[in-house]
Image (tube, one colour):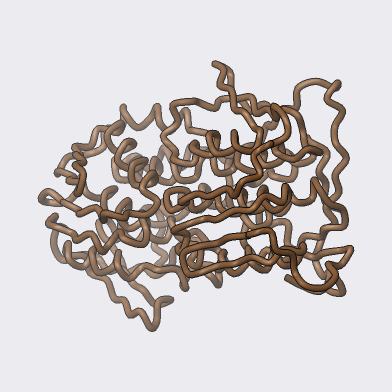
Length: 438
């Protein structure tokens, strides 16, 4: 975080609560789930229906990562370029690497944001090579990763559990191309698999799309088959709302100064996304989520009376850490988050970024490689009346910071536009509750 003397590019966050008597506050721009959409886009492409991607138009419920996946797939199929831009989206980079290994007719390299190439990909590359992929890669020169056309069809086989130990995206990338391999693909699931709901999302979507895939306790097997376009089209035409994006409105409602209720249309209790689990977690903070046929109502049902330490293993919901972190600090509730080491490999070193964020607003945050905690200790010395938050180009740090702005004045946020990575019209929805950037 930065000294108050450096406000370059920063915007002051202001909050003027909307009068509850004005009626129900409706958030109209909560994006489609990017985890859901990039998987569905991958299956549409592999089913040979890239024209459906061309016809899919950006809306106010899209975001850079969703649009980036679409453009990367179209670049792979419709241009002669040897360079595919994957932006700063680690999932897009990993999924396109797997798909290109199967489909490319020319050598392809990737370009992206500064942080992209510091994110892990080596275990996925080694597994793809094991299946017969023709990839030139050195861990010491990641920017030059090049996928070449394979000399023969990629085969199946057995992939060990170590491949997916640190990222479920490696498992998902391999699974998605599995129906088009020449023999069955079996992948061992690590006993302590992280982000397991994302792997389960891939499995469920593949099943819905007509692929032949089975999951047992310790492994998943994908059989040669194909995605059925008639099964995929309903998935494409009725996408799910992003529950990770909804975490910030849930956080707003947890604040005593925040909105009493918010409504979001087209949210389903039967969502396939693992971050739906946040609705149960937020009950501990006095926030209730009610599902109706037309959408979901988020309500604050009273001040949280539970001031005991909020302790949670978040290995399955790693993207919820910034929201829960700022909610706990804003309410001055001690917390202890476990198995969150993967934060180091996000759009920023998110573990370091959150520790700095906490310090900037007056809290002494403790950590280990896998844990983040606050035991009620304040930083030594005076906390400045004004604080400038640098999210380090991390969309989730920027959005989570707005929760603090509902409780205290004079918070400045640098590069507020970074939210567009996952929530293009975040600031429009923020203005719905009276939260603005000046």
